[in-house]
Structures are given as C-alpha cells and as structure tokens.
Image (cartoon, rainbow, N blue to C red):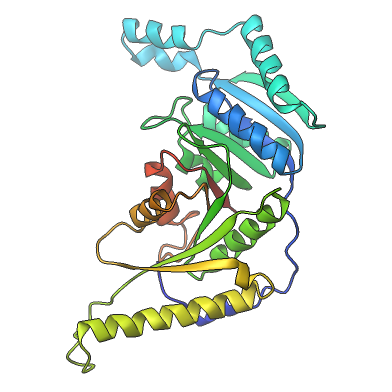
Length: 314
C-alpha cells in the first residue's frame, strides 16, 4: 500500500447512513458450500435490513464437454444432475433458514450457461446492490472465482469462505488513503451501525521503507523507520479527521512496516492473528495500471483467503 497523496484528502461531507441491502443476488452450487452461505446469510439478514434475496444456481452448458474424455464428461454430468425435487427441496431449505421472524422476499432459480456471465446478467437485471458467493478452500465449486466476480460486478460483493464464522465482532479495513479506502471505511461504519452489538473497527495501513540510503539523510535505519512511521501515523489521523470526523475515536489504527513482498498476505496474517470476523476492502486501491477494475491487493487477498468473509465495496 502507498502513502497518502494530496488528492486523496477531499473531505467526505455526506453523513454516513446505516447499511441496508435492497436486493441481494446469491450464487449457490447445490452442494456442500451452500450450507455455509445459508448459515452466514441467516445471521447477516437478521442483523442487516434486507429487502429481498434472489438465489441462483447455474448449470454449465454440457456441449462444452465435447472436448473431454467420455468418462470424465460422464462424471462431471453426474455431479450436476438436478431435478424438480432437488430444486424444491433447496428452495424450502432457503426459506426455512432465512424467513423465520423476517419479512425478506425470497426467489430461487436454476439456469444453464456460463456461471459467471449468468450471475452478472441476473445481478444487473434485478438491480442487486449486493452479490454473494461462497468460496471453498482451494477450489471454486460452481465455476466462479471470487476475484473474477468482484472484478466484474457493478455492486458490492460479499465472499463467504467455507471456514467462515457467522459473527461480526471485529471488522478489518485495509487503508491505502485512496478514495476506495474511504468508501470501504464508511461502509464498514455504516454496517456497524446496524449490528445489535457494535463491532470493533480496525483500520490497517501497510507500508514499506523506501530503498533509500540512510547515509544521505544522515539518519540511522532505526531513526528513518521511526520518522516514516510517524509520517504515516500523522497521515492516518488526518485521513480519519477528513473522512469520518464524528467516528474517528471509535476506530483503531494499526500500522505495519512491510519488509517482504505480498501486501495481501500481510493483511490475511494480521486478520487471522487478531481474529477479524469481516474484511471490508475497496474494489480498487492505488494502481499504476488505471485500466484495472480492481486493485491487485484485493484480488490476491480473495485468492488466498480461506476463512474470513470479505466485503468488496464498489
């Protein structure tokens, strides 16, 4: 992550409104990972006002199997066999998990095609403001990689790993002082407003020591690191004063000096060691490749995260 730039200090003047979901789009695989999605959504929709949830399962087109060996094709087809009884059973399960003592509107559908394309199309058709996907450790069961969905979706994306816990007691917000960090932080605060028991919000900035000669500035390495940390700390507090002046005292600030590669790994390590329950990240951070729709740090984090739900803010 990069240090503060002058252009990122435009004040966020609008008040932070409580977080709500008008229409959620939820991808299901009709398999084991669905149980974790439903468990988490049962918790989430009881805490966060949710108007409607549209559940979608996409069967891959079987004409794509022509290039596969016959035995492999038969095995894959058998994994995706589905009938009306299965659909009805899944819909009943969804309704039983999400409608107790709630007024959430539920729909469930099964389509055939490219899983990612169909999900994105339906997300746009229903004007969803949140799309939800599960993530099994090491693989993507329904053909949709979390990073691909988060890159292409026009709305917020919630990724629920199969090892996730259905609770929000600590929210981690990685901050690189970009406008997307502002959105992520304000979204985390908005979401926290809706929780029955407010969570602890931790803002994390990861920086690195520039490859400069300490002799030219007549400082020891330790003195230079102390100076750099103070600079980032001052910038962090200025960032909070600018964008969340009324909530700044409720946010904890953490700084980590990165010595090796892999900012995403530092974030995951910190989140795991400090028992974060939710990571809220901007869809894009500082990037020299302006054509990218999502920052490489966010994309890498989604690829290696196997335990902590992550909300990617657009």
